[in-house]
Length: 137
Ligand code: SF4
Image 1 (cartoon, rainbow, N blue to C red):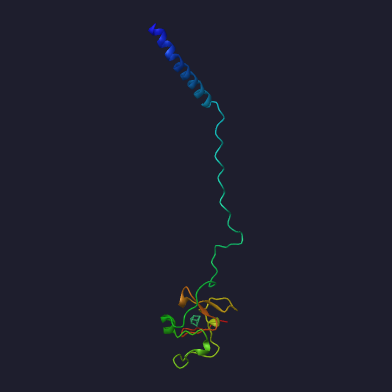
Image 2 (cartoon, rainbow, N blue to C red):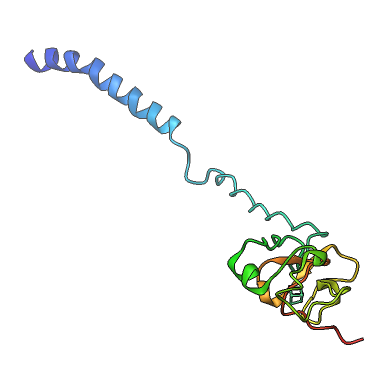
C-alpha cells in the first residue's frame, strides 16, 4: 500500500514535469528554422565634393608681412613703396614695387603675392624692400 500511495503522490509531479518538458520543446526553435536576417550592407563613404581641389591656391590664404617683422625691418620692407627709405636705400627709384620685382611670384593685378624672402607670407604688390630686382621685360 505504501507503494500505491507513493505513486499517487508523485503522479502530479511527473505530469507537471512532462508538461514542462513539452512546453520547452515547443518554445525552442527547430534547427531548420530560417536563418537570421543578413547583416546590413556597409554604408558607402560620402564622395568628396566635385568642386573641391586638393591643390592649394598659392598666396590666397597667406598672411601679410608685417613691416615691424625683424626680417622686414632688416630688408627695409614697406607695404607702400612711396614710403621706402630712399636715404638709406640708395638703389630705390620711383616706380619700383614688389609687383614688378623679379622675386615676386604673385599674379599680375593681385593686391598681394608671395615673395621667397618672406616664406609663408605675402607682400603687398605696391610694397618694396632693399632686395628689389627689376623683373625682366
Ligand atoms: Fe618685394 Fe622684391 Fe623685396 Fe620681395 S624682394 S619684398 S618682391 S621688392
